[in-house]
Image 1 (spheres, rainbow, N blue to C red):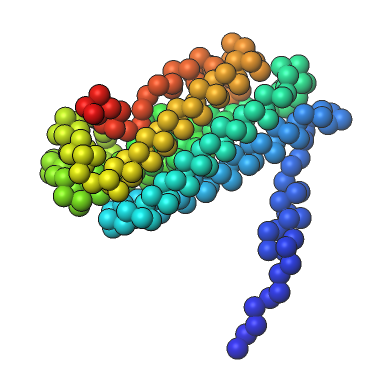
Image 2: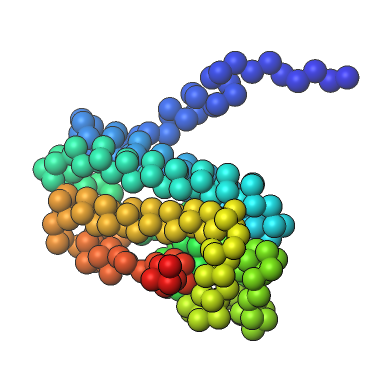
Length: 262
């Protein structure tokens, strides 16, 4: 029998490699550039985990496993809250402190985060423009998710499996196209909330996630506004104006539409 190598804490977590990845480019370097790099690298790690958890949640929903779905969706909600909380740390950096190294970013922009685009695609965004600026391998991953069932598609399979009929035309729709709110789906969701408490909790977890994503977008806009004002964003985006255009677009519109039915 081949014995497994003995890892210590540093070896298992690849600490030396991890700590070598923060490489400021400014002269000095500027004190706050390290903070900027660390925060954004942590975001990318959380996006990686979100993709992992969202994929698992989809499998649990399709399998009708309510307990596992609740656990996974609760974890996703908590990760989103953590992502929002990190903005508080970024906002300790003043506009002058950011401007001291901003030019070193060149064309680099959070707009180019392939993993965040993957998260958006899993949650149902269908917009080829978001993949266009990405590198070919990254673009392929995002496009793959945009041509696969979204989390909401998996929810619809779950709701139907719980005995609340979803129209076949919805279950068999072209998943590469944006989902549009549907009155028949809303009727099924109202019935589910009235008679299946556990499944209703699954829906409430989804509302938590939707609200968390909208909170992330709002806090991101305000952070950009207080840091660069109305300047153009790096990477050619319109900065805060672009981010503001993404606000208040729910991921799961049917779940918000039924709020007035109770």
